[in-house]
Length: 333
Ligand code: UDP
Ligand code: MG
Image (tube, rainbow, N blue to C red; front, side, top):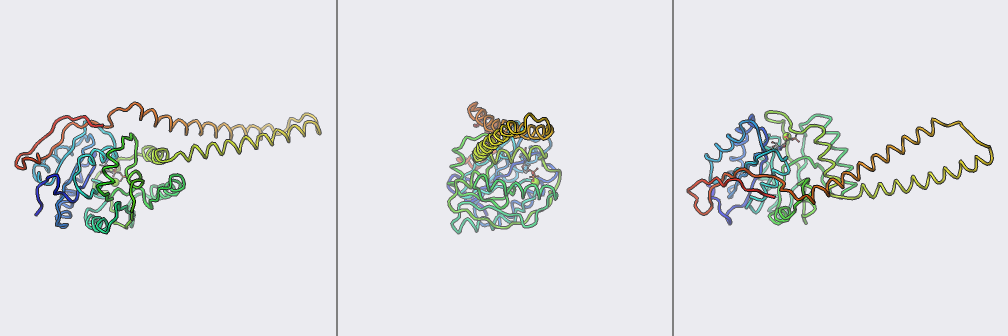
């Protein structure tokens, strides 16, 4: 039904990051390929193994040998994170439309045709909103609060930032590929480059197998990256807070000076002073931390190390569609 991969013929590329997903991979294969077949267009599926330590790489290799005409597998030699895996996938895509999907089947592959249809209407970015999110209540509330804060700080309008089932136009992908950011958040990056974005509602399912790969700390880090990577508004807010505090402490000083002359020396209010001091020290430490976030980002950028390392790429040589090819150990930035 599909034409073999070649530079010009692929319409839809699907990028799937995989990290220790052996329990759900077979179910993923069983649903992704039929969903794409139903499109009736040429496609490729790019799996990026993000340094899994279970049987995922073997299962991906087996799948590649089963469907070499439409499958490509990128094997990292370590765990570089979901977003780096997707970026590596992007660099290997050829499709005019690129779709990202989680490997745990929380994003139903059957929604892909709806995303493609939306792109065909002329949009260059299709974001998604999970109709009924199947995650813990804590994650739902925390992510709603973060969504609101992020929208204020970054001007990026995403109703549901966490859903990775999204579609991007070739031009947006090319621009993302030209970026060399170390810690980034792909849906937000793509949003800043898109000119005609749209959002649609999609289904959301329970994880098919295994557990979420994100700890609470990693989720907090991801949100910090999202805010500091796309805006310097927090720094500007901090300068504003600093200015207000300086003016109020100058006022306090004047009041205390007047009282000193009118009432003589006073010793009451020591604890109020303590409270005030702790409060100010807290603000100062927060400010230093915030500054550190930006300095850290600059440090990571100027080091300019490769963002990930590819151990092998399993793909069929486009010039010779009969042979399967495993390109070895290329180092990508
Ligand atoms: N993932 C990855 N590298 C990581 C963590 C996760 O490639 O270091 C992949 C994972 O295999 C899955 C997707 O990213 O396909 C989303 O991960 P997960 O389902 O654990 O996140 P959640 O749905 O809990 O946000
Ligand atoms: Mg998930």
